[in-house]
Image 1: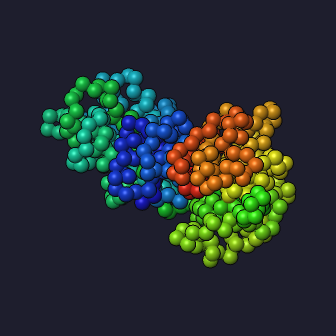
Image 2 (image 1 turned 60 degrees about the vertical axis):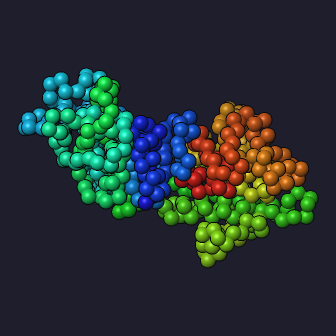
Image 3 (image 1 turned 30 degrees about the vertical axis):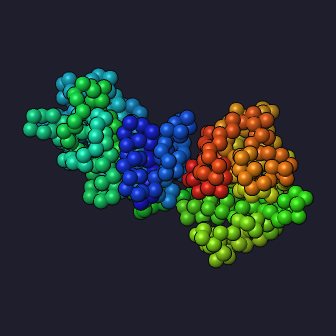
Length: 439
């Protein structure tokens, strides 16, 4: 199952991510602060995004089976909570005297507003999971009890669960989908001692599952421009190069399958050369390309970049391949398009050698677009691995650093995607799919 989890680095969210991964699910883990990306475990597609942004939620949810929100909603102006106290009629956890500390009542009201928003929606298939009175770090037992809109307690009136078992409940519901458009509550005796009163979180860490298979997030989608190199010569070696096929096919098909309109441009227009070493017949996206007359036609008849109007696009993605090192830098149209899209709140992204497109882009304030930004790109070590250090006109890692970028590099040939606001970059071919999911 493909799922997006917002709040993936939080105390609850991190446990939900771990539980989902342990069951073999494909997880896109989203954090609001890019500095938290390093906290995410291996095996996830890591992105930064704001659950309060409709655009971010739509883009990061496209193509997924479900979405999980493991964050606290912002405080609202709500007046009551629908979670009832056991045996007290219509008394709720908000109206019960002294049940919630004053410091958390506003948050609980906001959670209720989130539940009401779900109830009013007529499209999404959702479930709303509310923790018991005590939600604490502990151990995973896999045992719990569920309720509906009444607080679940044991025979002694205790209401508690570990965060680890809370994650179990959530992923169980995600897999089995027994509670459609309903609120549910869970409970278990945790083995953690009761002195963790700071975790008194009734309905504070509520989670929302939105199943997206019944509707598309790509309606009225932003248009994406993918730019390829037109250079087929690897310097003066006599060897052929071009764009790296998976750095086109992986992002293209992820975007296409999510319903986004895509144009393909190249520096000169017409046939864009494919690096002959980039064909991998074990790559499903490459094989799909060989049978896809539409995409083949877009590559053969790519749009000359000089004719591109950047106002037509919300996203530009520069595919990599060694050929880009000669015709992407210092290209007036690459610079024009990148500047315009970025300054109009669009997304600029690049894969592998694709960030060569960014080395000469200046914004209206005269600063380089990459200056002060965190960025990933093909590394000096990776160039040495393929014996291109002395062939290229410059080393991309060094040039970006020279322009003021903070180059963030991972292990050679391993996935590494860096998100710095609306600038999204990937280090190498392994990063292509993850990059576009962040886009």
